[in-house]
Image (cartoon, rainbow, N blue to C red; front, top):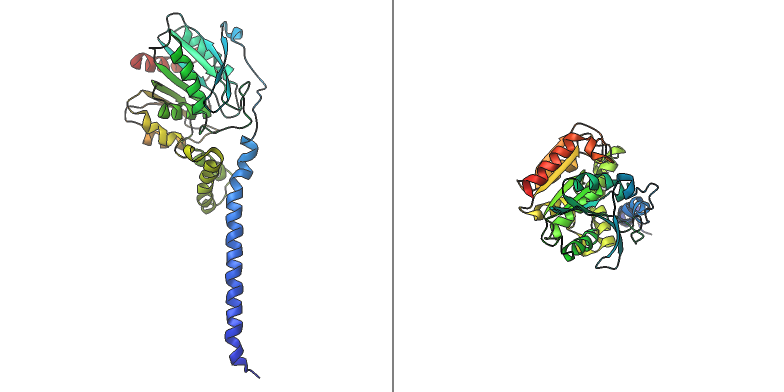
Length: 316
């Protein structure tokens, strides 16, 4: 019969094996949770078509707009509206946000800038309004939508030699930056309340819920991984903090409310750190995510119109 002393090493080895097995199981489960967490949170937000409750009409702003349907390189139909100025000095491309409003909310801008000599193209991104698609690309894919608009502009004889300015708000501001980063025909950018990257937005959402900082740090890379898996390897560098540097010497104007209730001001600061040195910026002490005090009627925000007009006049 074996002594108690001779059985102790065997018992110790069993305990060690059980402990190692438990550690492996916990690690695998933790990894599975981390991999599943971003799609669980983001899926309902992204995997849908956005149908707007409110859609404005050009005639509401004493405008006439040509309704367009443009095709992207990857097979999406993009709904757009063209507002023409007489003898235009440039073309503005207006892009709206993640879930709202419809880009038709920019008809007030189109009216104000038509009076200043600019034509406009307003388009709803894929997965929004009358544009096709059942998902939202978070700015990774929507540059292809902007490219379809740019191709249309360049094909019009009256626009062929004019500057093209991408002008977006919220996610549209991010798409404007990303688009300029990958489309050299874009002459400049006006971006309101853009995020720096989607991982930053996700992390800030976790911070707002007062989740542990260590958890936020651990989850953030998995948000990037999910984005790459969902939108493709080619999308990995298509985010504003990266693409803003590719704008080079083209003019760019960044605007952000300091106490923005939807998108943390830190996004603006990160963008400015990565932006070319000539980037023009303007911040306001306020909470308005869309920055303009009267978004539907921007001419009522005289300081806003004065500063944006100065940016356009100085550069185009």
